[in-house]
Length: 609
Image (cartoon, rainbow, N blue to C red; front, side, top):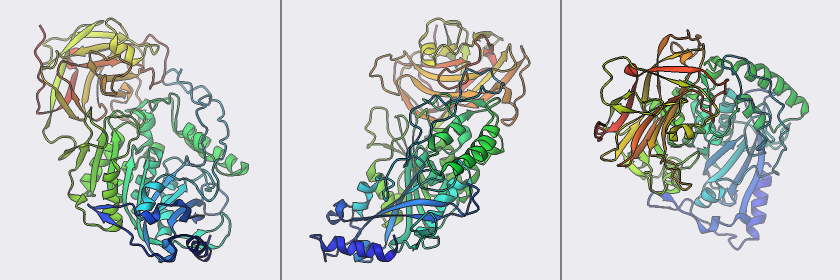
């Protein structure tokens, strides 16, 4: 749809409208936030159209630059009053449909460590959904009545966008960059995927903000790493900032929570909804099979150049847009380190960045008033002081998500590391104390993936884990930061999974237990990668190794009367591969230490007798 046809459409709409001839003020700002404008609320008087934006890449090998399918929803006043408005932009690979909940094509986790995985089944074809010109209606009701244009686009190789899904590589950054370039008058838009008439974004003010959740939150960060002019602000919610950190952990094959057996090639199949059969065959062969399956390495879990190209921390120097990171401390799908690592890097680079964290699971955007203040400031230019707000906003355990608590920074500036050391107790529970043992004491566990982490944490007596607890807390303890574990371990085989949970006991088994009641945080690692995350070195059976790694970042208040428990085990049934049970891990307690970031630097508990 070109400029002439949209103008004619707007004229026809408004002449039939009771608002015909009225001129309205956009925006209306009160208390630093863009307000809903009554005249913009009726969707019957919105202009909707779609187009294709030309990119700078050709991923599907047809010799032509790929074009992205874009849809626009805007007030008719952008034509009748010649208004230029800022854009709220949302891009996704999910808009046109996915492979659904069918997990029959996932990798079988029943695999010996170090072996090539058994061949998986072919994924079902994705059934294309949606009708033109509307790609999605997300965010429209929130932002168009406040005076923003809302734009959506389908990611490469999905929906009516051309190309192949490359999942995290250059095209997923360059595709939204092309759309932003078009919005700002620098790119090329067309009425059709092939040929077509040029389309201009004459209604755009040249200021764009992006937001979205999960994969849709990853794409704003990807776009921002290009440094594209006109992208003023991004609000990524639970973004996947590194596909290695999503599918691996410290050299270990580790699946995202709820998706056992998923890997990057599975995600490719899950979203690949675009293209005709010839294009799909090309993409499947060249991208999925010869790139992803060949390079993802489910045998060792090692880091490599394939994964490095899909880690946005490696591109963070390109970010110029203001960033409000949003995540949950109990997100075991996209674990919280994804946002914390980016937040810390952006702060170091001097980028305007703030952090909103809550205590729930995957997803959960900031309160709409917070988002509104950010969009109003960076897109409308309102001097509402958002840049002077607190750096960290954290929803406390029993609070509503719309009422976060302000903190000067994350981690809390008063957090100091406290060291705790285990004392023996296997196969029951040992203790955690503030000084290491005077002599070497060893305890052994036996791997068995048949037992879930939850059941192991609750067991009074089992050989399948080692667990060590503090005494009951005399006062509540505020943890803020990234706990770290140091273990000296030996294994009777050349390879083993290594899993660590930090738990709050006694375990609350009530069906209405809060997400924060039991699991404080977790971490996983491959002992074969102690020297380099890029190279696995087989373990010498019986030889002790020092293994040190971070658990997931957290900010949680552990209630008075609870005990903090350190659980060490091997295969984590819901996250790791499932090797044949029987591997023995031996822990040297004297050389094992848990470092906890505690606000105030002390843990108020009485020493056990």
